Image (cartoon, rainbow over all chains, first blue to last red; front, side):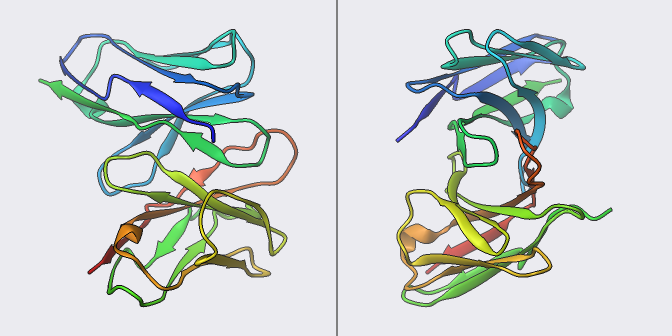
Amino acid sequence: GQQLNQSPQSMFIQEGEDVSMNCTSSSIFNTWLWYKQDPGEGPVLLIALYKAGELTSNGRLTAQFGITRKDSFLNISASIPSDVGIYFCAGLYNAGNMLTFGGGTRLMVKP
Amino acid sequence: DAGVTQSPTHLIKTRGQQVTLRCSPKSGHDTVSWYQQALGQGPQFIFQYYEEEERQRGNFPDRFSGHQFPNYSSELNVNALLLGDSALYLCASSLNRGGYQPQHFGDGTRLSIL
């Protein structure tokens, strides 16, 4: 079945640094999504990407939909302590149907 | 405006037992999806319900079954529980309106099998 490989698995950075994480797939997706999950909570949608090559920002977050439709990346600029959590990429092939999630990137920020 | 609510928040069962988990979708949503999230992993799609029918299913055995009610709420049932069924079970709701509609997740039910 479809699999998403997310890297790095974990990052420990200093407050104020920029962060970059990415997601690759062996199959194409028509929609790429980035979620954040805090302990004891469900994933919360950060950014949705709908077209190959699309670059979308949400505050300090920027994500891109790879032109091959098999990859995506997420950048966080000027990290702050509340950015701590697990970030998941997810791909969607058909609208309304199943999301395929990556394994997550655990972000830790040192004040 | 209530978001997705799940109950119970935690549950402990023993091998071989059966369990029912419940989900109320976000107000205005008509589609419910269920995911299993093992510790340290990303969520895995179990199935999706729309108009009280299972619309798509992931790679899960038929021990996992579900139901959607006329008010759009949903239940996930798991029979003959195995130790490997220990996980966080997430419910997500969305609106079936053509194109991609964002799925909103609840905070999950943590199921532990002893």
